[in-house]
Length: 335
Image (cartoon, rainbow, N blue to C red; front, side):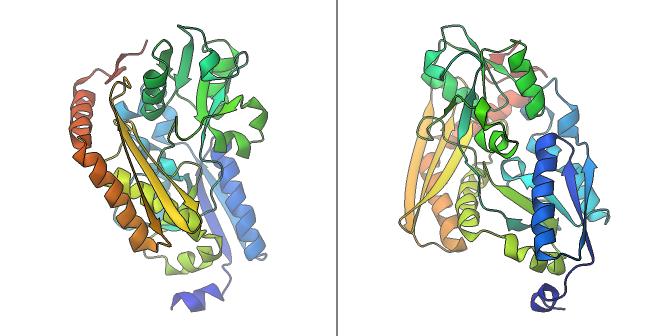
């Protein structure tokens, strides 16, 4: 049966696999509502699951298997038929999907910027020397250390509510979070400042939702097609091409962010050392790209970064990560 036939035959039921954090469940519910609008007679259920990434909170992601820990259990549910699709924050999706899986749709992007959150201070610039800043991201850590070496950057794990709770208990003077998650949960008032991408370049896919399916589910791909936002998809595919070419993982502070300007897609990429002392940057633009053009744009940016020495940084950090203890990172202990 071809996709055109599937698209005119509404599904009787769809099961969505999702992590059980409040943000993940909001994202799954967002997709559930969108599907119900498209297919009012369809019974859309959400299968909540706890992933290894949610369970391991005492170590940084780079030490325990990377962001793939947030999706493996959901993929198992797709593989054995317990679920038809899984909803992910696209920045948590590995650059190479396992064989047999595909992204069925990429939804319109929310704000991709990083957000500064603090009960007392208005910005990173306002923090006194020695202030403790929390982040779960080596990319953000490198940005802070590069621009504000007088601040004390420490790891921050847990779901969004857990991180905000640690801030409110005074464990941190400020924390850096993705603006998209705060806005989706109605917590925009917690944002004291939005960081300019020129200062804190977002991660590949940040702010976008991806729907993962089994590659053999042509029916599901057709049903999801109306949810797909092509402009967002081309931007994040360019970003992910940079990360894919450089072996991007939680072990490497790597950023890639694409924006549309007057029909052209402009892409910036950056690779850093976690201490922020070395930052490589590159940018390129392409007019009216299709998917091949977006991927080629990403490859041009990654090639520029490689020419500046990005692979040396990636290899050095990967080696350090494998030899460090479970509670350290390439930038040293974080206790």
